[in-house]
Every structure is written in structure tokens, then in C-alpha cells.
Image (tube, rainbow, N blue to C red; front, side, top):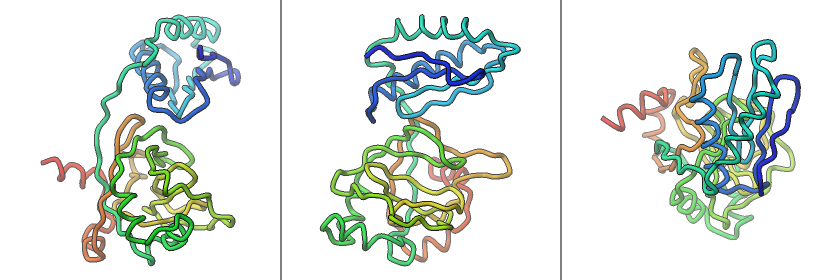
Length: 237
């Protein structure tokens, strides 16, 4: 399918790829995003990659929208079918999996017809791709969940999901970087501070990869509140 290039308003342009969650399609999204970024166009405010859509936000008083669309169309027409293979960074996130922090761990196990330990094993065995950031600052939508763990969202969302909670929703898994309402099924919690509100930044980007490792309650307490950027920096030293 040839990507569609459409305006989504007076200040944004969408490049729309096939309607599915697929690493090859996401590679194409990232390939276009990186090349547009390299253009360093005046008036280009933001570049927002998602699962299958790239959104370019621009200042119409500085950037000519139709000219931008034409230039992006030329780029997409010459894009390799597989896109670039983006080699992202790898992050291993410590998680406490138990029923006090994994608020829905038993429910997920029951839905899957597995034991709690089998759910933990499957969740920590996989290597997940960050397809996009959204919903909340630093909220990473992760693909690569084992199909045995596919679980619908909660029928009744919580008003306050604790920061660091790791959840499952349908075919996706992810984590809540800050306390917020949410309807994902919570299977564990990381002690790391995943989003730095002072700098409005998170260590993850689309194309990165994440694995989870299980930790004890004592290890959770020892790491509680540590900034993720500091933890990952120490892990690579």
C-alpha cells in the first residue's frame, strides 16, 4: 500500500501507512521521520511518529503546507519498501511482580488460563519494541506481547493508577510513567521514576527496545524513586 499524505488541520500533515501493528511498517514511519528531521526545515514544530502514522506539525506562517506535502510525497515515493531498520537502544526495566503491586495479576492469569508465575515468565521473556509515545508524557506503547497474555482492558478504569505500574491492554503492554487514570490490567510495578517532570523528558524513543526483569520487594524499596536515566547510566558503566 502506498502511504497516504493528508492534512489533518491547518498546521499538521499526516503520512499514513498500512493499518496494522508491524515492525516493518513502523520502520518506514521512523525512516521518514528521521529524514524529515535531517531537513531541519524552518517552521517545522514537531515530528510525531506512531504505530503507522507520522504527524508533522508546522507553523503555517513560516512553512508552506502544500510545498511540504509535495516534498514529503517525493520522499515517500522513493522510500525502500522495508524502510530502514532502526537500531534503537535497549533498556532493561526492573519490575516487582506480585499481587500487591500487580493489581490485576491474578485476573490476567485467570483470563489466560495460566498460573501467576507463568504470566510473569512470559512477560519477562519477551523483547518489546517501543512503537510510539503517547497518552501521557513518556508513556511507551510496546509491541511484542506473547499472544497468551492478550487481555482486554478493565471494564471499569481506575481513577488513579500508581506511577510505574506495568500493564496489559489487548495486544499491548506498557507502563504508566506518572500517576493517572487508566484501564490497563496492571501486572507489576517498577520502582524507577520513568518521567522527569523537571525536564519534561523520558529516556525512551520510538524504535527502542525494552525488556522487563523481576525483582524482590527489598530491591524495589532500594530503587524506589530513582530516576530512570540514572539507573540506566549505572547499568551501562
